[in-house]
Amino acid sequence: MKKFIFLPLLILACSLLGGGCAVKTMQANVRTFDNFSLGQKGQIQPGTTATNLTETRVQELWGPPDSKRNATNGVVVWRYKGDMSGVGAVIGVIIIPIPLFVPTGHDYVDIYFKEGLAVKVITSITVEKNY
Image (cartoon, rainbow, N blue to C red; front, side, top):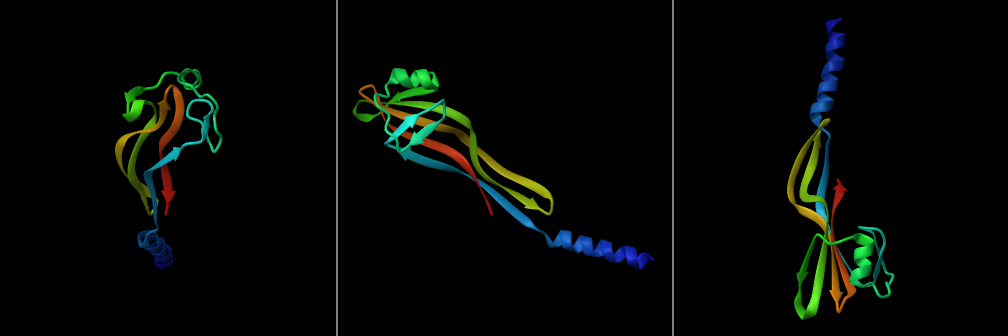
């Protein structure tokens, strides 16, 4: 009787220890849009040109930016921060996930204004990839 109990347990242990391994990585995805329009806060519609997207209109849609800075050639950059971002991986060994994550900042949207009109948007958003 002991042999019949021992054998299934041995097969189960070998299958678990033989190990399945799944990996999920997280990395920044940076995109630039020259033709765009804005929806609610955080929503960007690429490929469509917004007419007269002024600083006032952007502030009406998205509220005040988290930071502002002056770039070259009279360009002003407004930054809107999103969720915490980072790089790393989650490795699933057998059934136990092991997170390996290093915070690197926040997801963000930068809106570039020239002469009071939005001319470009750059986004950095953390994306997950499964292997």
